[in-house]
Image (cartoon, rainbow, N blue to C red; front, top):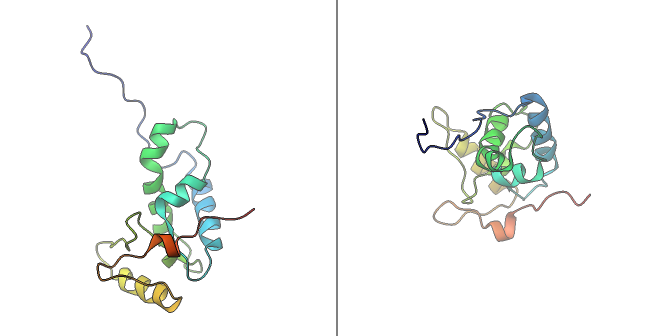
Length: 130
C-alpha cells in the first residue's frame, strides 16, 4: 500500500567520520588570518562532501557539523574567527564566550556595526590560495 510519502533518506546527525571531519575543520580554522572571519557554512563549503552523504543532505547538515567541530575545538586555534552566516557571533547557552569572541575579534581590527554584525564583504576570508 502506497502512502504517497517519499523516503527522505538517511539523517546524519554527525559526519560519518567525525574525527576526520573535525580535523579538516580545525586545519582550515588554523589558516584564517588575523583580522578576518569565516562562517560555519563557508568552512563547510571548503570541505569535500563525504562519499556516503548525498549532496542535499550535506548542504543541510554541514554547517551544523562545523559548529559541533568548533564546540570541541582545541583552545590553541583561533576559534573566535568563526561566525555565523549573518555576520554575527553565535551565542551558546550556558557561557559568555560570545563576549570574549567579540573582544578578540575587535583586538584584531574586526569591526561590528550597531546590530552586532561584521561586514562580511570587508572581513570575510575567502579561503586558502593553494
